[in-house]
Length: 80
Image (cartoon, rainbow, N blue to C red; front, top):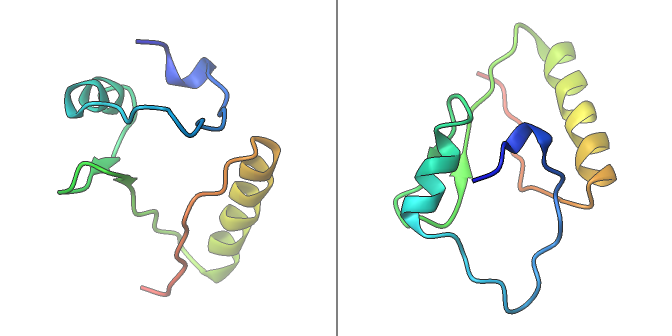
């Protein structure tokens, strides 16, 4: 498996086969605090910040990076 830090996001094609649970677990060992959901269909992580300003700064940075990568993750922002 490749080093995730060195990879760029590339769009999946319609015939792309999802990763197996075993392959996903190998990738998860490279990233901290991410979890595979019970259906083995998505990974999730909760980020916590000191205040609203830091939260929105993170969201804006994530939006900039995901737009550059042409990858648009599902995101949820809430307070506490």
